[in-house]
Amino acid sequence: MATDTQTKQIDLFESPDFYQVDSLFTEEHKLIRSSTREFVKKEISPYIQQWCEEAYFPQEIVAKFGKMGVFGPFIPEEYGGGALDYISYGLIMQEIERGDSGMRSTASVQGSLVMYPIYKFGNDEHRKKYLPRLAAGEMLGCFGLTEPDHGSNPGGMVTNFKDMGDYYLLNGSKMWISNAPNADIAVVWAKNEEGRVHGLIVERGMEGFTTPETHGKWSLRASATGELVFNNVKVPKENLLPNKSGLGAPLMCLDSARYGIAWGAMGAAMDCYDAAKRYSLVRKQFDKPIGSFQLVQKKLAEMLTEITKAQLLTWKLGTMMNMGKATTAQISMAKRNNVAMALDVAREARQIHGAMGITGDFPMMRHMANLESVLTYEGTHDIHLLILGHEITGIQSFK
Ligand SMILES: Cc1cc2nc3c(=O)[nH]c(=O)nc-3n(C[C@H](O)[C@H](O)[C@H](O)COP(=O)(O)OP(=O)(O)OC[C@H]3O[C@@H](n4cnc5c(N)ncnc54)[C@H](O)[C@@H]3O)c2cc1C
Image 1: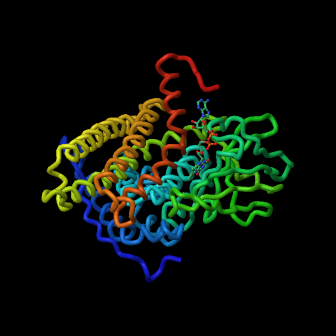
Image 2 (image 1 turned 90 degrees about the vertical axis):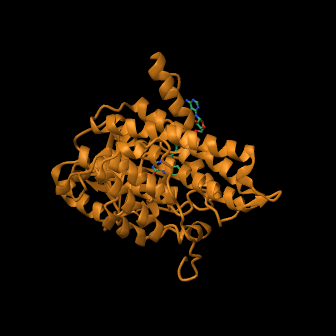
């Protein structure tokens, strides 16, 4: 357990803004970003290395995130949300993932994959019952779509429920579910007797419902991942989300989460770039700072170029999200580009640190390992490419 032996690392992060992207943000956006950054410097950076070493999920972060307004900032205030726009949401995700992708995963699952479907597809009783507590961090949720045999192809899911008159009988299992071991509720996607996908709210404590933890991960180690197992679970009929069914419902949630990932990955890239820039100015070889060598400058220049392109991509996407006009394919492009970009930046930044770069004294290896999951979840790198290919040609190649 991470407790008093924590190695407190000093967080000197300064974000790059080469193209004055800040001028596109409002004062409120900048305030939200700076307060989230301060929160990360105080509550995450000093402890994250140890949490990851110990594969420890800091449960207490949930209430702290709630207090900060990190969960579902786009949800209306009457349900406990911040009624903020999508640029604000993006900046919050960027800053948290700058701290750690696992921490951002906890936040984006709660906001985009639990609160969003309850708000969009639930009725007013669902909204009043769950959203304020989820927003405040008094309750943690998870999102169950992926199954052991159905990852990129969630439409093939076998988890199912039968109408038993007074209740629904739920059977099946979900795998690779973020927050599952600690979640109070799960938004679960399952097929009814006609094979149509519906969302159900399953609560911890329901008989036959278990959430075994997945161990041995080398990635997202500070985020708890697990299974959801349903063995004849009697789900009250009022727990069905009534306002949308079909695979389009979970895919809408994924659009919102993938948008947050596009911003979040940029945070991880900025952290690696910032560490590499600083290190290149203090580390000397051949009697000179390594930053004076052209090959190191090339790496830094290319990192900054890619981060700047990603900043412009996400800002524009955010404005389209605010107007309700961003398409799935546009979101795929940003998620895919920015995660791959962040992985490349992490690798280059690690090289600039030489041997020191493989240690936990610097963030690159942790970000790099985390980003391998981010590259795969919420639609793999290749599946997003094929979504774009479908958009361009009108021909779907992955079914
Ligand atoms: C740490 C972590 C947390 C996660 N959290 C959640 C969560 O909270 N909720 C949830 O529901 N899921 C979650 N997931 C699951 C994640 O969304 C899936 O892992 C992802 O969708 C890919 O599915 P898969 O792992 O089964 O890979 P597969 O679908 O088996 O794919 C394996 C490989 O085959 C490729 N491939 C598959 N189909 C095609 C095709 N038609 N054409 C070309 N290539 C193809 C893929 O791109 C990939 O490279 C999480 C995963 C991880 C690692």
